Amino acid sequence: MSRLSDPLPDAAPAGRLAVVGIGPGAAEWLAPAAREELALAQDIVGYTTYVELAGPFRAEQRVLDSDNRCEMERARLAFELAAQGRRVAVVSSGDPGIFAMAAAVMEALEQSHDPNWHAVELVILPGISAAQLAAARVGAPLGHDFCVLSLSNNLKPWAQIARRLEHAAQADLVIALYNPRSVARPQQFAQALDLLRIHRAPTTPVVLGRDVGRPDELVRVTTLGEVVPEQVDMRTVVIIGSSQTRLFPRLTGGNWVYTPRWYP
Image (cartoon, rainbow, N blue to C red; front, side):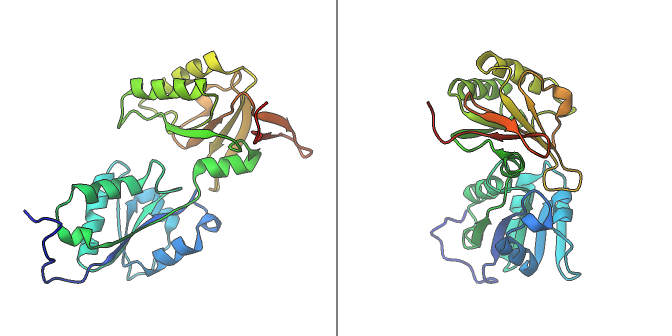
């Protein structure tokens, strides 16, 4: 078995692997550095939906897309290609470091004893997250301390999620929830609401951002007392305000939401 201290074998020069955050999906939210990286890549690796959002690509660029739950396979494929001297872009929606591909890439690298993988030039290019854009659409609900939690129990038990959610609620943090509700687990968002309602007033502002930054974008402002699970799915990011989060009317209709930078 090779060790990281072993000399590199005579092989193709190490390539470059860039984990690229494409933001919410619309071209105008893609950072110039990310756009350049995608343009220079020989191989594009990613979940099919996100690869399509990141394109179009030139005929000579190779697109290697796959299903949503193949993160580690994609990460290992990307390293195999980059270790051959190729320039590879791993596409991730939003910010790649928030419930996305950057962690999978780092995990694959840590688990590998192949010195060629560790010689690859690895860069992570951040992107605008769904929570950031949803917040910007309505004002500044993330203007004070906040946390980000995923309600998906595919990679961690629900008991752990509920415990963290309760601690965040007790700490009076604004909470951004990713992966709130799916066909396979329709009950968990309702359970999360029940838990939050123990610690937050019914008038607490809630922001629902579905497909933010995409053609079917829908952002609505409601309250903890009024929100219902059926308003939410896997393509929705949910922002639950703290006790200090404020809501006031816009002149053009609807409401602004923000969390002051100070506490009383």
